Length: 318
Ligand code: UT7
Image: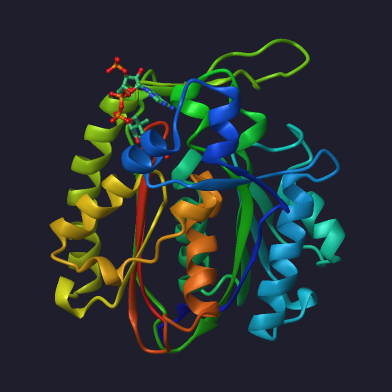
């Protein structure tokens, strides 16, 4: 009998501190008008000193487990997508496993930058389809504010912090209809972090050739969403929601136009969250489900693009 991964529950966490464009105007040569028109971002949440990507992941995961009505003891796989882990090891996933008292099971981090959640979801989907596990906890948790140079107006205005979580369960009916991931390392010099110093290990600041990244993102995502629909056997008019990675509203709208999808069918969080990297898709998914826009039986297309370059997609029947 075929087995599929179904979305059983979602959760999210955003730090309390909010940094608005107007706040940034006071410390940088920028303006609310520039940031809003070029990116769609109005504010972002900033992690506090006593929080970590694991503490944020814990809150999001507990909410996802509660909404899924699944016990932590039943989880058979933990994947945390992050490019801002607190430590090289143990992995964030193992630290989370301890906090949630999840019994022995595979637990590891995935580092695929802004496409991290797509990677984690794809791996969990494969393991559920292969009937290796029944329940998976898949999380994106990021502290991007600790990775940006707050003097660099071309990058620091873009990013925010937060965590999103989903619980997947094995089921006889789909679920995730198709998922795919890929990468092309020849573009590694267009978006990267500097080497950093001994203290910070790999924690150098983000460097980005923004307009080049923008053009390749739009082109790659156009192909990606077409391929995703083809793999799922759906037409774009059968899609109910686009749940995209939130890097730039102009990139998202270009992808929606390519799909001939009206703007009302996009779950957008970028204005309030900024780019939370691997956390952006699960946070958007959680928002759409919480406010009841996403309804059972509907078709969702998730897509992401990030440093590497990396990219990924999933088509889901909720
Ligand atoms: O999530 C991972 C993937 N990341 C992305 O997908 C990001 C893709 N790139 C982008 O979203 C856009 O390229 C940005 C939002 C980063 C930049 O927008 P842009 O329209 O490509 O602007 P630009 O970099 O070409 O810069 C235009 C001008 C420049 O001034 P000059 O050279 O024309 O005089 C910049 O110096 O805007 C200037 N600028 C700013 N001005 C005010 C750059 N940053 C700012 C700022 N405030 N914060």
